[in-house]
Image (cartoon, rainbow, N blue to C red; front, side, top):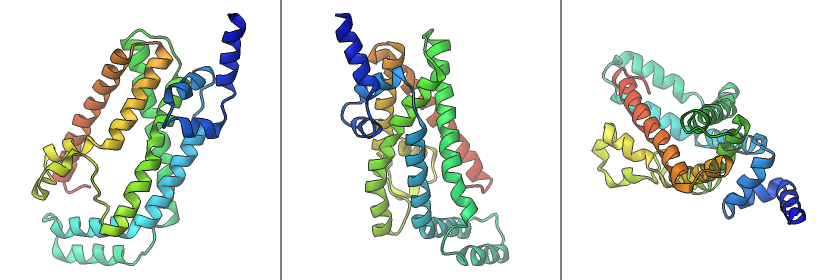
Length: 243
């Protein structure tokens, strides 16, 4: 019995990186059990940083187009100033190199913030016993859902010539509600976000040996807090003409 246990442990520990990336979509529990033995997060970070850089580079014209539209609709900015801003924005076909740094930096910061949140929830609020490294690895691999999301969304950006591609409940709302609090809430209920939450809650359960129900409840509560706070702050910033 002991030998069988050691054999299973060795098999999990020897899982290759390619296997982890592939199986996070098909056998995620095995991936998380492997990561419980030896947490890792660097490869998902690199993959998502590259996806972010490529996406930003090729969708930049549509990002600028959206920003110009918002500037034109912003009544707080004088017309003369609008012309100057729009003219400057139109001079660049591609983003400056320094802006591409935002993708890896933003990805790393986001990983760390979420890992801290779920680590605090698991260890402090729920009395579990796991490590920050495990939580970081759980969210890093769960975030690889960005791969199928990019495969679907980026071509749609080029087809529709807009970065406002919705795969969320916001599709149920009329366009004139786009600036509303309700729209921002609905936009967070995205199919790829839900997929990421499911993976994160599964990884949470594996790392803490919690039930699936307990883990899902904890992760969803954290996410709902984020949804309401971020949606409210977005409305405040929009009110001041930011974003």
